[in-house]
Image (cartoon, rainbow over all chains, first blue to last red; front, side, top):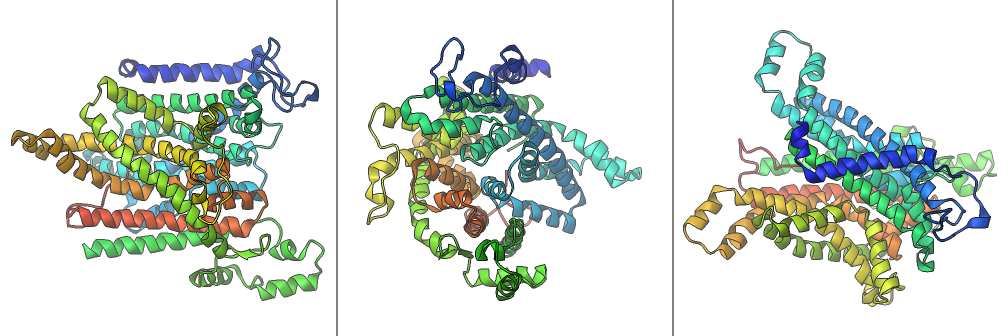
Length: 273
Length: 322
């Protein structure tokens, strides 16, 4: 399986980029510690120099260091959302697909209902009701992200549940919960994994959009979207280092997760999206 | 067939009811009481009680929900105390701008993406296809505001070809400044092309593998006709589903583009309302967006059923919903 993945040049490149990204965001601040908490008005909007390779922003924060710290929030939230939303969505979808009938209809209409409300509108609304924290964002983005996996796994379950080994398990008197957890979910694992990879990318974009519109984590917490939000105010002043690095980071991260997801999809031969 | 339509419409009605319930619950999450928000934090107990009684806020929650539905049925989407305007009239005054902006971006994207997807499918896995696939993947992974910023930097602040934001709307609405519309529409078009062409490519690849394509070629039909008569038409079926599913994405990118280019539309109103904690406007627009999404997917499914006689007949199952 690893060999098959290795054949995907783009997938391997994406995985390599992800390794570098994690090293940059989590190990980077240890190598190049910068003060990202106290603003320093003496060094605002400085062009790149030896001391500040990517310059400083309007609050005097070192941009390179801020990219590292901001990336942490993006990656942490993206991964946490992917795990939570996938777990919950998979269970929900498996239950619906396996139960069938009225339960299935009810569970899936709930999914349809939540799916009808575009996530960004609900997120912005909730951000105006309560000040977002990292945990709140993980919770809310997960609440809006489990719907895709739920639909996907329900479809997968419908096709899996008529397989002979499920019949065999049922014939031996296995309870429904056991059949779902031990037989259905492991067999849908490929689909789940691939989808989770795409979900990290989606969650990162959603978070960045929210931050870009000014409804993300409150300062001094850093996010890439928030840096872009602040930097665009200086777009016309030519402070390119406050705009482009953050945007490039978002784009590279999302492309990398999408590439890995697509390579995994071919490798695991999973149906998704 | 009529059974399918009936079932599908009933389903949509149920989902719509669910959407109103979710929006009602969201409304109850607003901090503080509505009475204090409107009468001021120092309003005395009696005034608050009178306000609650006048607005039905002293009823139990289920009754309040029914009240809310009753108002909705009469076209009352709520009232913005901040703008001193009903949410319905606010949306009605701005929705045409959204229709123009999002509609243009959508139509242009379809005009580009459909032929592009088919061309890619025909030349599958050759250099040209891989190049376009890479480009669309990059566009697809790009948040719309980032693309908008790049376009502004390149064409506006860089080459000075176009204004970085739309001018104030004149007598002809946002159409009075066509130059200012170029960048927003271009952004929306590119975002949609990335999405649509990826979809169209895989739909066309599936169609090209069908037996009737081989038959058409075997009987000597010119390739041009094979593509336009058979591949395009059959791949369009998949696109119909895509149209219905794309409503939330269109409205989301519309919101972002209106924000970046300062175009007065429902999206920008939503943003302004959020920045000012103007909850009735936010919730009214959210509800409307939900209704648009449900209607979009219902229309898509109905159109699909009308176009494809296999749908709704016994043993065919419902249309694919990826």
